[in-house]
Every structure is written in C-alpha cells, then in structure tokens.
Length: 74
Image 1 (tube, rainbow, N blue to C red):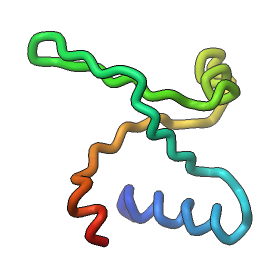
Image 2 (image 1 turned 120 degrees about the vertical axis):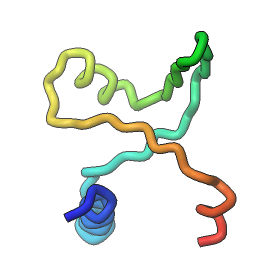
Image 3 (image 1 turned 90 degrees about the vertical axis):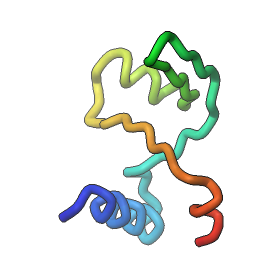
C-alpha cells in the first residue's frame, strides 16, 4: 500500500471511530533560509511536544508541502 493510501485509511478510521491517529498541525512558527537549506518550525500541542522530546511515543513527524491552489480545487 502506498504512503498516502495509508494516511487516508488512518484518517478515515479517525473519522469513523473518533480516534486521533493523525493530527494536523499547521501553525507555522518560523521559516528560516540558510544558504541552500532551510528550516520550518511548526507548533504542536504541548503534550505532543513533550512526548517527542522524551521519545516516549510511537509517532512519526512529517512535513507535507502542498500546492494550495490545487488542493483548494478539490
């Protein structure tokens, strides 16, 4: 199964069962460009930040960059 198919299944499960296997955090706190590289800082709920910092979780953090115009067309 492809990556985005898996995300879709998790999202559907969340909708149907009231779970939170996928969370959307879209609060951009900072964007910095250093030479040919850059960093993006995204705000997350405090309890998620603590879990990530303490590595006491089973979470994978990803950043998706989406064409907003095309996304909004859907």
